[in-house]
Length: 85
Image 1 (cartoon, helix red, strand yellow):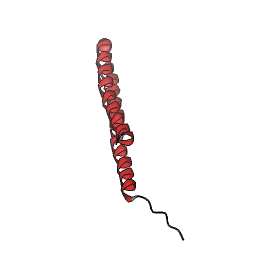
Image 2 (cartoon, rainbow, N blue to C red):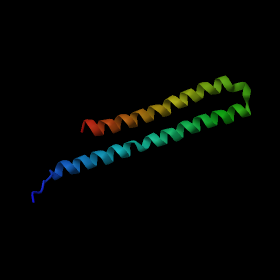
Image 3 (spheres, rainbow, N blue to C red):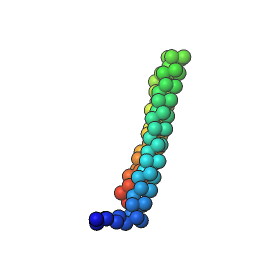
Image 4 (cartoon, rainbow, N blue to C red):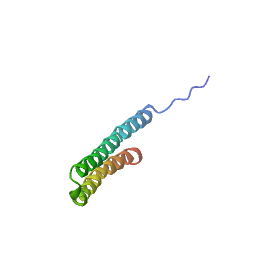
C-alpha cells in the first residue's frame, strides 16, 4: 500500500486559520444582538414618548451604524485570517 503523507505543518496551519476565522465571526452574532437591542429600545422609547420619535430615530440610526461597523470589522478580520495569513 502506498500512503500519502500530508505536510503536517500546512495541515495544522490550515486548521488554525479556520478556527481563527470561525472565532472572529462570533462577533457577528454579538452585533446582531446589539442591533436588535437598539431597535427594541427605539420602539420602547417611542411608545413612552411619541413626540420625540423623530429625534429618537436619529439616535437609533447612529447606534445601528456604530454596531454594524463592529460587525464589518469582525468580518474583515475573518477574511484577513482566511486569505492573507
